[in-house]
Image (cartoon, rainbow, N blue to C red):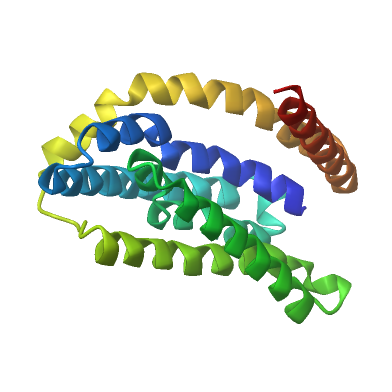
Length: 226
């Protein structure tokens, strides 16, 4: 069930990301020494992602309400969706643009440590599995808030006034990058979703676990081959 929920939420993560991990990084890198441009870019991307998040929330709850297989475990899907919401507040693209990758590395490590510790603290019996995505969501949210504070305090970047037209223009300009990234992820994610509709959910869990093992092995081979 957790693997199935994660696969569903991955679609919405892609929508909220909207290719900003490429387009926003490029724009930030070009203007990283101009604080006024940085603020404008940061604000436009933030509100673009907020608008996409609102659309995603509407789609997500429509799916949860209308599709029986999702409705039967709706609480797990809602908890899993917190990671999508946190995507708005975790501006990894900003740190990539200013080439401060150490912050991303440190924050990602802290997320995993908090998540691991929280599992040992709060998951006591089998029925507690429904709280696993919630713990991940809370850990991610804490780190997202810390990252926003770093951006505000250390880099003096904050939200400024922008028009709706500028926000919509930002979304429009990134549509081709979004399409280019969405369909490969659609292909990658769909196997878990399709399997969930036609096979028992324990089979989905085994398949998702096997995919992770293969992914880890591929990463190791890729690193060693370089």
